[in-house]
Image (cartoon, rainbow, N blue to C red; front, side):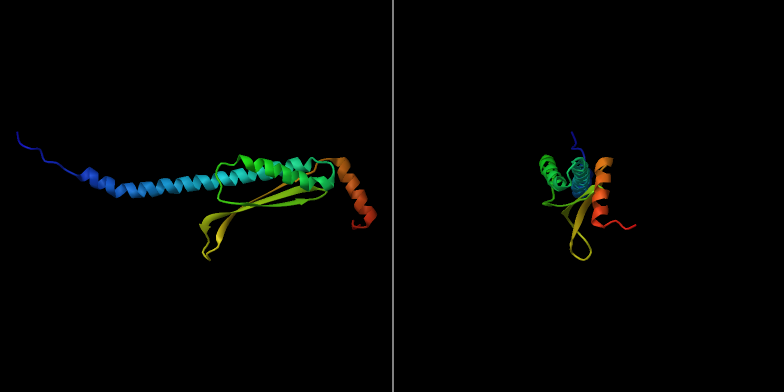
Length: 143
């Protein structure tokens, strides 16, 4: 029996395409991680701001928001690194800003920041009116 002619074109094509497909898969994992972290940070920022806005005492709001953020960030699976938290509380609402450095670099060589800022408005009309009265007595409301 004569020996059949063997061709190696499939091996050559595979060797050509596999590095590109591996890089594409790695890029997709990184992109999905970036999107996941953005969604996670956005959800945590709003949830903490909302729960903090429901606290009646203005002096306890910031503590409550920080406690909520500490409990919510325990559930994160993927992370680029440490998250910086900024909490602004006031009579009208609570604003939470979460920011984190990513491995991506800008053109100037600094790290690209992933930032999510969420605000929840305090909807308790009694506290709002009392706050306006306090400001009016202090002379901070301009008429």
